[in-house]
Structure formats: structure tokens, C-alpha cells
Length: 430
Image 1 (cartoon, rainbow, N blue to C red):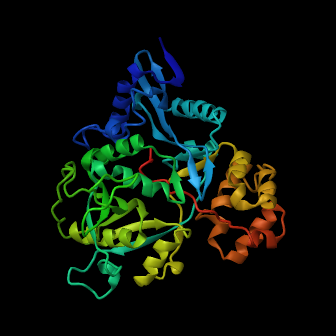
Image 2: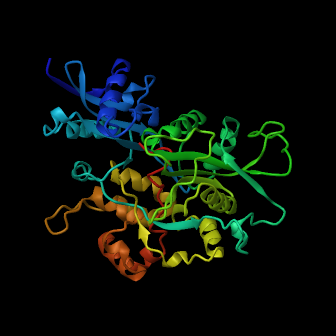
């Protein structure tokens, strides 16, 4: 029959797509089993096969791109968005531009659906050619493992007088409370309870169990809470939650979901976990990270923190961390503005009408000297980036933005730029 596609997969083709993804990303000579379909259940979904776009050769799926369409919220502004990943081609069919053909068709489809922003889990030339760029600024802040003997710092233990937290792995009965905490976050995806259940089910399967990835909660000790809309009678109150990612203790073997892995063997390089998501009382989040690091024998938990997370930054400062001196970095993936003008309109409540209008009308530029376009410029302008002029002083980037937007420097100086951007490596990661 020859090459067919690209087109959305049908339910009967999901298994073949998962098989291709497993052969490329979880080959059996490196992993004990193929788990891509378990790691990304909302993408490899028989109920929603259209989240996979494929090219076939006869009955064989030879290239695919997966995505999950979920809006992003930035401080109350709703942005139609999609996370894109699991991009792969059968080794026998590489060099024919198949993944590029799927990507182009899928981006056109998403644009027609009104998607303004695409989050891409990679930084390949394939994505750069489509207009993807680096964007967003965070500071990596480490919550070190708690000192079992106690250091005198109140943040090594329970920091609020009269309040204590018990830290444990989340249970199904906690999910509603966890979701409500997430919904209060200023930077987040729109998420349903079904989404959360699917994401949590995927955690033990990360990289075929070679990553130890879990959802933890801090629950208030000292008795059961009265019921409310989020909590049944007699249920513990969840004060905070934290999703962590780190190496498993034994390559190829994940600890059981309810077990505590043995301490890792001593190594010359300290092992850190990474915080993928957190929500709720920030002092509880910080204390939870320190306790978990000590409990599991790692040096600490690294948080990618935006300057908008004032409460967590205050907690870090109280713990003696001069976070203002830490460099700002961007996520390792990329971002694509499918509709730059629409994206600016989404954010106009934060930007203000004058600056928003100027950004929306910003002409596209594509010259040999600058090599930029409106799609490539708008994201770093809105959200910052670790590269180029954003790395300088505030005076420098105010002057640069003023020049690029052709607006008075005073307008830029008074603006909220750069805006915070949701982190790419969260439970919604594809």
C-alpha cells in the first residue's frame, strides 16, 4: 500500500503506535520492558486515539507525534495550549522527513482548533525549524536533606508553632484535595480529577521503573478534620503536595508504590531529586522536601522556582538561601507560539492595553542579521529566556525591549515583563 498519512490514529492503531514508541524510547536492550503507553496513558489512549498522529506503511506505524491539549493558566489568564512529545520514527524509515510532515500537519490542526501555545518536550532542530524557541525563567533552589539531629533552623522541621505535618505518599482518597490545591496555583494547566488519576497511575512506570517518581502529601496531624466539599468526614486534611523525580535505587527495577527504597550506595557525586510540581502551604512543601530527602538518602530536592512564587522564595530566604544571586535558567524543552497575536490577547489583562496592543501589532522580522520572526520573538519578550539580552541587567533589557517594541522605556519599566510561565516538566509532560 505504501506510505500513508499523516492522520490521527484510530483506536485499532494505538497499540502499534505504542509498540513503535517503546522500540525507540524504551528498547529492551536498555530497559526491562516497554512502558511508554503506561507512562503517557492520556496520549496512548484507546478512548482518544486522535491524540496520536501517525504515518503508516501498510499496516505498520512508522512515525508518530503525540500530544495532549490542555489550557495553561498564567495568573488568571487562560491560554489555549497543547503539550507535544513522543515524537519518533522507525529507524528503517528515518531520513525521509516523516516526523516533520506529521509535525507540520498537527500544528496546522492545532492552529485551526484555536491553540495559541505549544509546549514541546525537546530542543531538536525539527522543532526549531517549526519556530520553537526557549522561553521562561526559573531559579534552581535546593531544599537540602534535613539534619536528623536538628540544626536549630525551624525549617528543618515543622516551622509553624502548634502545627505539625505527617509526610506520606498520596492515596486515592487524597486526590480531590490535591487537585483543589493545584487549582489555586497561579501557574498551572487546566486539569480534571480523571487527568490527575491518570498522571498518578503513570508515576511508578517512569522510564520503565528506572526513575523513582511519586506524589507526596503533607497532612495535618492531631486528629481528623470536619467534612467539607473536598474532604469526607474523618479524613485527614492535605496541607500541601509535592511530586518528585529522581533515580531509582537499582536501574531497571522500580520500588513498589508503597515501599521505601533502600538508601543508595555512597557516590562521589551527590544525588538530588527534582520537584516536578508542588502546591499548598509552602512551608509544608519545603519541610516535606527536606524530610523526604533525608528519608530516602539523597542530598536534597531541587525546585525550579519562578520569581512569582513569593511564598516559596520567602521560605528559602528564611532558610538562608540568597535566591536573588542565583542565575535564571529556562526549561530544556521549547515553546511555540502558534498564534502570537492571540497569545498576547490572552495575556492583555496582565500586560495592560497599551503594551498589549503594541505587542499584538509587532511586525514579523526575518532577516539574515536577526534571524527572528514575530512567532520567535513574542515568547522571549513575554516570558524571558536564559539566552541573549534577557541575561543582562534590568536596565539593559528595558532598553532592548523598548527598541524592539518601539515604545518608551518608561512603559517597559512599568510593565510586569517578564511574565512567569508554567514549568514544562510537570505531570502534564508529554
